[in-house]
Length: 475
Figure 1 (cartoon, one colour):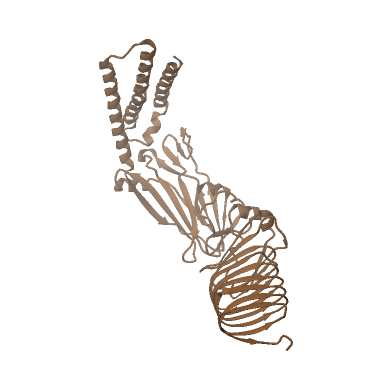
Figure 2 (spheres, rainbow, N blue to C red; figure 1 turned 60 degrees about the horizontal axis):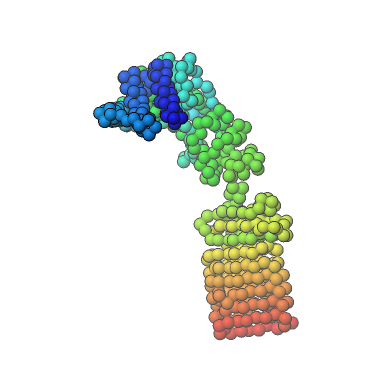
């Protein structure tokens, strides 16, 4: 019984709401539909019966279960035939309305700018509107006009070193000609001023021109090295904001200055917290280096790539202590941490590696480099793995440093001291010059010749069948 009353209440509410909408808001449909009163009335009538007939059918089933009554077959068949007619009629109306949006056309124009300096400002300006009769959020209706805020702003890097602003108007219509007419029905202006533009927060369309999904796209191109400021009022129109590491961003406009760099915009007066929120890579400035200096507890992977990139992962408590700097072609990474609860993990991508110095770090991996010369200085109780093909490798190892090597090397030069260790029997070496001192150990596979100086406490194993020339340590 309660279920039946609920369905009756639902059906009554739908009918009352529909009649209210038609009586008090049908006039608004003339901005969207041709023959709006006829189309709206018929469509509303169809929807009511498309929804209402199944509800009545459910009520009939409930009545049959409770009171053992049933609809006559003719009534039941007629009811569903009537429902089917309404469904077909509504589908016809939907197709008829949909055809009004079949084709889309665009209209482009370049807007001349007044550029005298290096900083460009975008400000917002409110559109003057009449008395609003109906408000649909971004779409407002007055007595004679439709006001739309469907405006998108894209900010990207310029391709030719100059500022450019292009306005694209888009609209739909029953055919290409009608769609083009609808693009011309948009009443909107961008106001250029010296070193900036003012953007209206909406545009208007006359009632007789109808709404056909008209919208505007503004494309601003900013040259590299130039800066940009935006009013907070412009934020809602941002569609694409080309950052160095992301394409989209929301918020934090007011009082911020952005500079266009090689890969996109970067905030130059944001706090470190804001930079992190923006996803800005604080290591992206480091480039064109081929030497590395590492100091402090960090796990480091150095990989050959065609680009430069540094990635840092780990607990913020520890990664925040990492300091990075670059002098010429030397990249330096350091942390005062001697022990960490979880490791600082650093990945370095670079095209070429000539030198690496590591002092008291954690494990290091160096992969897939092809160099004429490579110099390694390894100090402290860490393990390093090297995979490379080299003409010359120069090693200086001390204080329990460990090295495993793979690949090939024409000339292998090493000074190994203070319990350091080299496991190099998986690297194809032609010639080697070794000084192995103070309880150090070396395993190496050599093809031709070895110059060897070793202390009594050291252990050297040479595989292959090279000529070994020993040097007295006392000489």
